[in-house]
Length: 369
Length: 125
Image 1 (cartoon, rainbow over the protein chains, first blue to last red):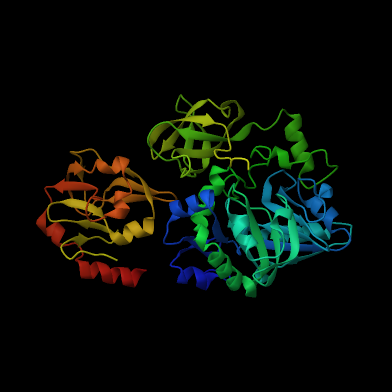
Image 2: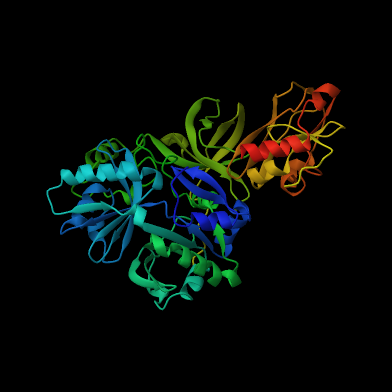
């Protein structure tokens, strides 16, 4: 038996199919199915239990400087209650994890991937020991539940449960001590679906109440619970990387297309020297690229990518039929010369070379409001 | 879960009808989720019992299809190419996969009956 979030009983009662995800028993889909859940988020809103995500709290006078030393993005430019997305690297540039950094009133919150929580916390501890400033770190994952309400109707629905004007929370900003359905929560306008939406952090014991209240409030809009299956297909269309697929310790963030989130102008951070070297040598030799299959077939993680001569040149990191686009698409690492949109490649689908074309990413971008 | 009495079943969640038709069970389609892609064999291919003859894919997963018994592929369900969702909607009817000919009656009789298939599900899941 795996670890369970505070909402495990809700998922089972709703008829969810539970699967193991990084040691957690999580709902992969509810009876409505992945396609219906995916569509709900793109057109209305869907509610996800993401309580399996890890949270590390950094406190002390130099907490922000410490976070800035840990990660590749620039934490020092964060305003109060602002959030940033960033890779966290090893000294050789390989990725430990990707995470969100919240600058809050009296602490800095790092939100990390569930399957990496133990590894990340050990890594952060190790860095803390070597850090000269005043910082304490604490793993608060087990006490913290997290719900994500995602989709164009997310604000309208969540607004019914709170007196806080959610319109005041800008993209990648947060508000603390917001009462949601009578419970105090940290609310941020963030997400992992490519849609507008909110993530709500609250004490584990309040999760069931708030989960039920959000589903009730969203009933008129057709808000439904969504599982990890839809979360994956949604993030994939939006080309938001997933650790273990597009990111790992064998690839640096520049290869993975995260240059925007790597601030080499920063004086120092773990992995800085290695990444500067990559840039000085003309940029990464391989790059994450998106492709679309031109013939029948579906590319899956691990399927080899071939050049037009049939030689293996890379590997698929994520692939599936896109529910929104109705086409089979994929992401994978390719030599830089083959990563340009328009380039013909092929995917080895169980021994059959299926032709494909490199296309611009992200595959999906929501239309501006 | 629907499990018709007049079919034979495999532990891999496939069914065989007396006329040689083969499909996946209601339980299997439910476990797969929304089927979005089906790969089926050429007509005329000779299959051994347990041989992988095709693939069903959902948004998230790829599953091999295994011949429940030996036989020659007499027909494949071409409707599934454009409408793979038929497997979810009607797994024992319009969602059939292939039809085999030359099936040995003893081979067919050796498969699970509905009761045995159901008890295997209860025991194994």
